[in-house]
Image (cartoon, rainbow, N blue to C red; front, side):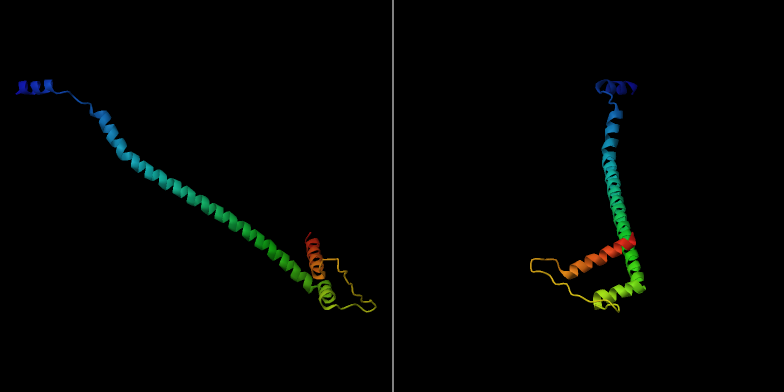
Length: 131
């Protein structure tokens, strides 16, 4: 029988299975690696979106807290004597004893509204008190 085996071996060639096995393993692992990479990229994108969202919410909260501070200051001023006096003079048209009331009339050519001017004045007063 050893002679039969020798004859079979002489007619056939030995094939090196190393490179073939490497290609087979590579073909199996590449799709798995691609899926892992896609999952990683998706996780990074979601994380970046969350960070951006958190930054936006933080800015909104800062803006709202600044707005709240201004409103609290406005309430404090409006409760003070000067604030009450200002409201009485501006909204109700009241005057102090000894003062002479006068009415300002506008020419037709002027386009600025009296209320707009008062609103600007009030805003400037709040800003100057803030500073």
